[in-house]
Length: 167
Image 1 (cartoon, rainbow, N blue to C red):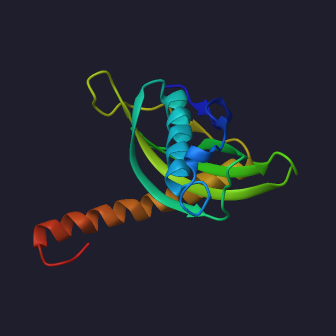
Image 2 (cartoon, rainbow, N blue to C red):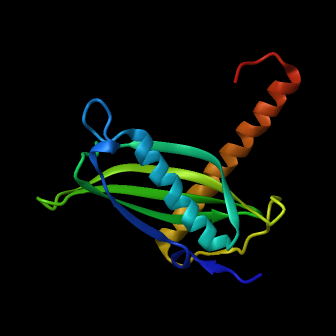
Image 3 (spheres, rainbow, N blue to C red):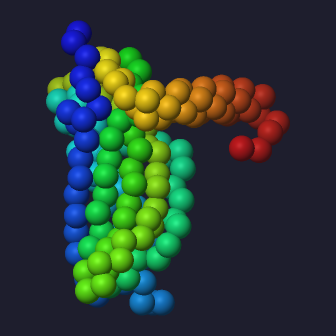
């Protein structure tokens, strides 16, 4: 199977935040940002796999700064790692005040998606072509997160068998 470059599947999306996106404090609701993150990552995952995908996990989602009504939110999603049927993507979220031009890094997230065939079964993926030093760094960090995820999954399975630990 021929490999695919990271830039071939990278997605950049932008959306204006409106009053219906706000929480009771008047900021954009974190759930709205979470949905946008999942959508952006899902599009990049589909672009890489050229198949249906499902979100398997969100390893980490950090909110750094608030997003306000009237901000233009831009999301950049790209692949960090590709395994046999799953892939890790990173999403960076920025908010721009369109009046002042000030841009804030508002959130970052790591998500894992699984590619599915037409029967809903895991689908083999094209390998990821890692080109730049930044790509290599992000790929190595993703491998470490994957190792941690797999270790936690093994621990959870053992807890279910033993029935004597809290997860």
